[in-house]
Image (cartoon, rainbow, N blue to C red; front, side, top):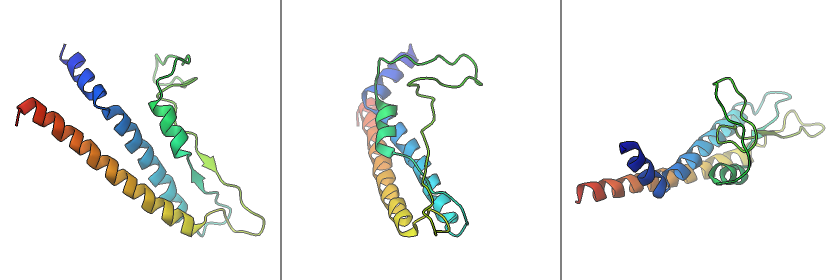
Length: 137
């Protein structure tokens, strides 16, 4: 019974959506930092995700059929919450050493850091509000 109440409370205030946002933001940060680390690596293809479409896909309540996972080694099929985000690799332009644009990567990292900080603060405020409602203070 406790799980049902906690599940309802946390789902009702949107905590799973913040979790999805923070997880995708973390993945985007890892990809961007990997791109920056490989700035001078010949033949390296920069990696990224389409953040908005992946976030929409993660937060979407859809009626599409998704394969059920009954074993940890199963591959998620269809529109499934456990299906990893699609990572895009940029193509290398003729004459360039790799596809990393350091200025673009630094700007993306700064924007991602700002968005992550704001989402983490908003999530913290949600928990403070829940604690205040529970303790009546």
